[in-house]
Length: 97
Image (cartoon, rainbow, N blue to C red):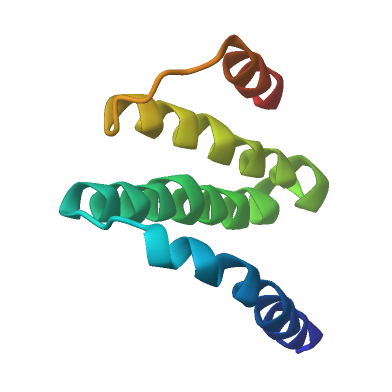
């Protein structure tokens, strides 16, 4: 489908912009686990919920489940990584909810 080709082109065009940051990156098991948790809980569960909801509620109402991703990312950032959260981030999460 066209979506996969579009994502491939976008990846090829934007990936070089991230390579300099990879040289300075420090990887650890904790950061890898956090990234996997964000992918599993923030993205995968939200997409599963959207698929189920699309069948039951319709596409327009089901798309509201995607707004959970930033909220989950914020919660995991605080809980797993011990990050400090700005008031603007909390306000953004509230808007998403």
